[in-house]
Length: 438
Image (cartoon, rainbow, N blue to C red; front, top):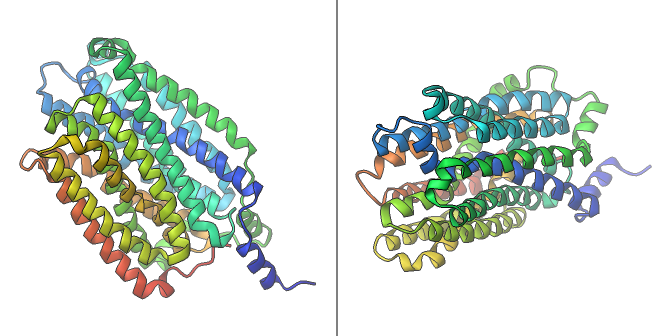
């Protein structure tokens, strides 16, 4: 009989096979379609602010109100993420991975059918808020669920790369949103967008979500969960209770890493197109086109960061990546303040360095043992993202009034925190990132 330890090491060291690639492909595609549903809102905030709030409200206040509804989706993440993770640790990863798609697709369809303020008054923004909360709950289970799902399928020496491919797939959902927003601005006049065309991207997103739910029926439960189930090693008490009691330092490290991920994407990718239009008079089409280039570069940067985290470790990868992020973001925003002709060059450069977020999933996967991994990762990720991603648009909306370069300083501060985290991980990595994937 072969040695079980030797068998485990052989499985961990094997290359990615065809089944791994199929799992990665289906999970990435589903994640991209679901993430499109979640973020398409931000590309139409200007139109939505006009349609879902009183016409006599000051423009700046309408914009803040709309961004606040966008932020509500982030603030709802912990509720859905923690609930789905609880059942994911007890009943299986795949079931929750599929449920999150349905919870995203239906609200997205309903947003596309919502009456406006002119038709139903104050109920319009309230309904929009409720649907964004449902979307937030869905995405709260989707992202941690995707990372855990592929990490427990892939060979251990390729876990960082596998998780970064999922993260890259999620960013392609942002790219799809940007491309459709750009197409809508090219095909329709502002009057047509306000009259009816704004609904099209949300209706498309709802259909995308249902397609993604269908695709996930071809996925299989993770070998790690099946082994835990067969050996009766599943959590014997409330998984989150065990996480909070026994893994507080892992939670803190994971939350800090998530803060890095959330702010980098929200500021550099989601908010910057509207920022460029309002502050530097960049045409919407030009801002969205450059944003598409940046998202493609971000997707590539994610994969590079994931590969590097397997080879160099999470600490050194994050330290180097955050240093580059600080330099590139400072150069981008300060150059845009006086020369927007460099937009198509500097925005993708910054987008590539934002790809350091691709190193974050491996850090969190290794921070928690398998029996409570979903709950530990989901709690840390969603609570931190709720604060970082939810409050960032509101903070910057006020800060920009006093300093047009506020996004630059925000990302520079973030990068310094990331460098500190990387340095800490380098000196303590053996103590904190100690849990085997399998």
